[in-house]
Amino acid sequence: MSFDLIIRNGQVVDGMGSREAFKADVGVSNGQISAVDDLSDAKANLEIDAGGHIVSPGFIDVHVHSETALVTEGQRFAGVAQGVTTQLLAPDGFGWACLPPDLTEEMWEYTRFASGNIEMDLGWPTIEDYLVIFPGNSPCNVYPQVPHCAVRLKVCGWEPGPATDQQIEEMADLTRQWMEAGAGCLNLGLDYQPSVNADLRELVALCKVAESYGGIYAAHIRNHTLGRAGAWEETFELQRRSGIPIHISHERVDNECEELLGRAEKEGIDISFEAYLYAAGMSHMTIMIPVEDQQGSPAEVIEHLRDPEVKKRIVPYLTNWLGKYNQVVGYTRSGRFIGRTLTEVAQDLGKTPEECAYDLIVEEEGLSAYIFPWQVSPEEADETIARTIRHPLMMAASDGIYNVPHPHPRGFGCFAQIPGKYVREKKLVTLEQAIYKMSGFPAMRFGISDRGEIAKGKVADLVIFDPDTVNARATYEEPTLGPVGIEHVFVNGVATISNGEPTGALPGQVVRH
Image 1 (cartoon, rainbow, N blue to C red):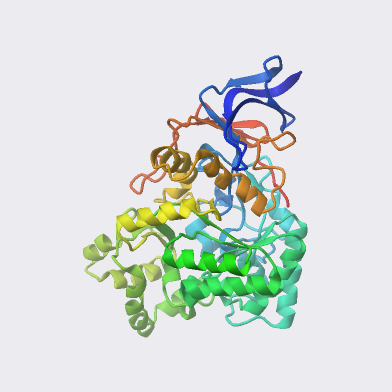
Image 2 (cartoon, helix red, strand yellow):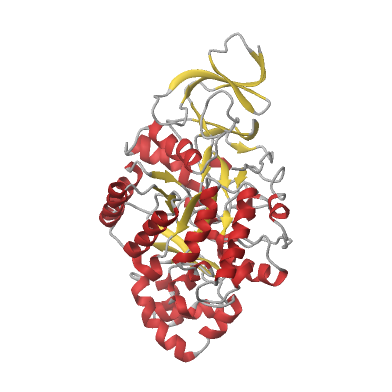
């Protein structure tokens, strides 16, 4: 018996969470797992001795702003270096396909804080025009989702207010096209333009389309406009009316969330959520101003904010959101103030932090992204993270942002820190539970049927790591440091990380629902 690859002597964690690690060899042929057994008598073109190491399925990042990074030079290997072999497209509903040139440029401008400081040839008139850029040009697989921001922008533009029946039908048709192209999820960013303008009627209609294809609904929920509890309640109601399984982006389990999850269980609401397990988020500062002041194209919003009366009204409002003013500047159009706190910048400019934050939105023409630390004590943050990772409905996702001057470390350490910090050091979950949260659970939840598990017939997306050394190195001060202890990563049976270093191979494909 011969194989393309045999991984020998490793401890296999199969990704499904219920079976303890077991010693076995893994044989790979034609990009698929063809044996999980004692293969002592078999031969292969490539053999790796994984003695003392864990062999796991490739990790699946269900919320990551990576798609532009994957196909350009710079930080395209940040995910695969952590063992991520599949990344989902259209986080927060961001997307640029099927838009006319003027709207493509405007959506690109609006999402620059997350898509990065890169140059790309814009313009993807059809879904396939966009998806075709990934095969053979990315180290990771990608899995499409319906980008609600782009869908709504094409039909309704930047205009506020609810959609008409005709507009909803047009958005439903676009959603149907995405689902038929292999999307497994309707994804939204309900605090971002223009998705924020969608009412429940629109969301239910689009969810019914996605649900009819076996898809799910995933959203950055409407925290800024409805408040957290109100946003969860809206999501519950959406599930009741449409029947679609729901997934909440970048959550954390504190007392309020625990109560909401308990309600969902009692009411039989089909729900899951993800977390990146850092006590800080990252976004643009514009999201912190009142929603009615964010409406319009990016240029129209900046022109509106230049009005002194508007500034006078909004600056005090920012106090409610900025707290300790310890936000860290991650990205500005001009490159000013990178890596410094809002307090430090304000002091240098002789302004209050609120005024400084507002002025930077205007001066940088909307492109001012920050790391936003949780406004809680370190002890409370640690307790919340512990409760979060232990929750059975939680899966991992980085929400990573790349190719910006000072990104959040989660994009470079989210997955590596889980077996290192949270399994080995803090012992908050078992290794088997952790791998399930990074592979088998997201695969099942998002309908990625041929990955997320080490079993015969599954695609050979595989990770080999040292359980004694694996960990993240990225910090808030040095956020782009790569992980340690992840020795080998295979995507579709092709080595993308070998002995801890990228091979340069770009075997990623579009994985369709």
